Image 1 (spheres, helix red, strand yellow):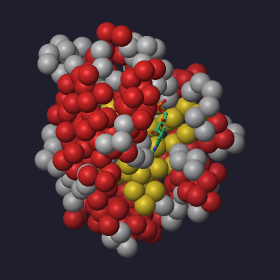
Image 2 (tube, protein in one colour):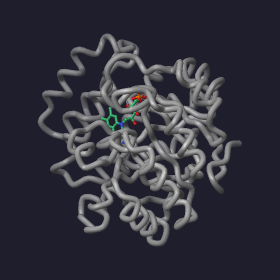
Image 3 (cartoon, helix red, strand yellow):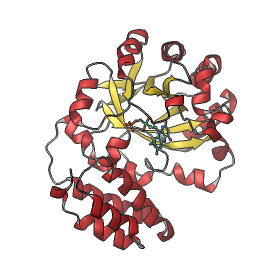
Image 4 (cartoon, protein in one colour):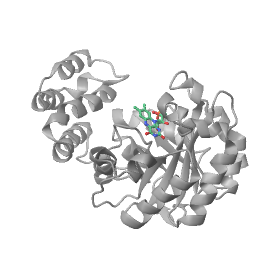
Length: 313
Ligand SMILES: Cc1cc2nc3c(=O)[nH]c(=O)nc-3n(C[C@H](O)[C@H](O)[C@H](O)COP(=O)(O)O)c2cc1C
């Protein structure tokens, strides 16, 4: 059992936060399926929270859960981040706060948030220091190897000293975007430098690869690979497959999309998930284009549930 702050974390693998994907439907599916250490929302704007924007408030909606859930905040200044974190602590049932220091999107970086904080270690440190001083929920941080150049050792060490309860590292630079291979060779170097929980992230697609990484880091976060295969966490935990196979998980996710989204958004949600579901698989050209061409949610659902899983790998 691993601890993040006061939270007992049962499993050493979890879904990486992904905007448009780790939404309420996907997190509910993961909570029902089990075997993930914790769950993280999509990145939530501090400003949107402050303004109580409807879209932002929708993104932090909760359901009854058994897996600890973190809100991931993005912002550039310690003050507003602390206010947002206090709101989460006092007004919601979330279990912890994660700070985004890795997002490469220009709109985010331009405002000094996301990966921009990797260029400003003093500010990154002040954010964690002030959060730790002002809230009692666990505080974790998600970073990359650096902005244009690797400075992960310096950043991770500082965040550790300020009391970050866990540090997740996506082993790419901001300037890499999602290109090339994640550079896991940095994992042992970071491990040596930090005492806090270290979570590694990048390009994990199979349970075998996750288990290999778990020899180096305390836990692994899986992003795209966990949309493609929601069963990956059960596989890592060595759990018996039971009834929750891939088809079950697709069907359940579609049910949850229908439950949580208004009809006008359901089709685009289903298509977005389907894109990652098929990515990197062979034998799914036909089904991929049928889903893509679907004009109603029910049609996309029918194609997805009629697909022959033995034909795609
Ligand atoms: C569509 C998409 C949305 C993402 N949104 C977020 C986000 O909101 N917050 C965050 O910290 N990382 C975000 N990421 C990065 C992932 O958490 C993860 O670091 C990255 O995808 C590498 O891991 P993977 O190879 O397992 O996918 C996003 C990635 C993708 C592809």
